[in-house]
Length: 262
Image (cartoon, rainbow, N blue to C red; front, side):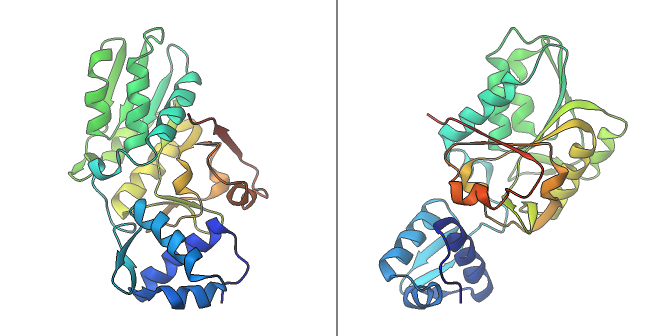
């Protein structure tokens, strides 16, 4: 039984239970957590709205949370947060910086902000994301764009292994890396193994290791852990992360910067 859990922790446990059982009934979840069916239905509505589970007659089944979701399916999830995170990320930069941009909707938002800031000159951006490279096209030659190479994963427009060899010897000023989940016990996770190794290589290749993640990523677990919480220099998120969720990371010596989301 998982009694007396807060909202964030309960929803995370619901995801795990649904994934393990493949089908859960609303009354069974209510009994398990010691809450009302109204509360559980609210949790399931939230999880379904964000694509974490699928509501079916009589209960709930897993969705694509632990598989690879297409880039387009994630573009409009927490869009205001991604915009705020992107603005904060670009505010960290100065001319002549070298940065690594991971695949994902949040890092693509960072690329859009780089285009919108012509005062930043002589930047070098290394990326494994076709969406990032194409987004940066209007900023060339002010921004030099380098692709890692590798095998294309079309659902994410991501280049993966053996692309990490393209990062060998690189010491970028920043790596901005996305994730599927951030959990105090499971660490920072992603939805598939090929991308996990690329993310690890990116973090190793940067002086400042930054995880960019909207509030929906906290207290979630993906398929593959690519780093531990204390292997990150900064978690860049928004003020929509609940205090309850942030409290779970209080014992880690890592900065969590929650910027205002409009």
